[in-house]
Amino acid sequence: MPTLNLRTNVPVDAVVAADILKDCSKAVARIIGKPESYVMVSINGSVPMSFAGSEEPAAYGELVSIGGIGPGVNGKLSAAVAEVLETKLSVSRSRFYIKFDDVQVLLPTTTLPCASGFFSLQLSSPDMCGCQELKIQRPVLS
Image (cartoon, rainbow, N blue to C red; front, side, top):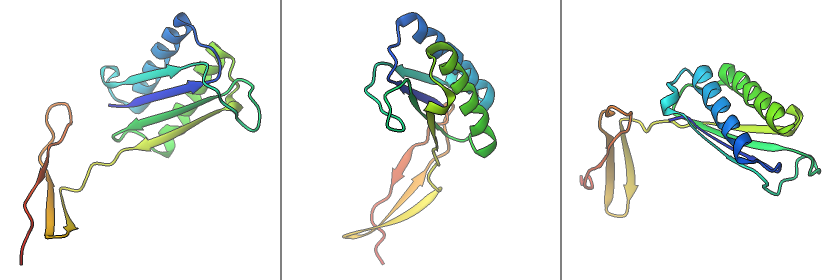
């Protein structure tokens, strides 16, 4: 599930927030290539924020996704979100920063040390929503 969290020092009323949520949700789905039904977007306005030593309108975003992002996509997504914020909140593109986090799935089997031996972690196959179940086995004693 791609999740875009936005914070800005600009006050955001309910009407503008709804427009930003709608526009960003569509952009994330289109650019990442995942169904919009999987996309989550939040915006938090009036956050005390300084950028480059100034409290002029600014915004910060974080996009977390399991796959679908990378160097080619990140630039397009950053530009699309910046355009929405500039149009709706008058936040200059030069005062917007976004952090991308491509969440990696654990390897199928990982062995971890512990005080009484080693634990083996295994992921079962993903279910319909892509969630995976974590199974922990008892210590492996040699």
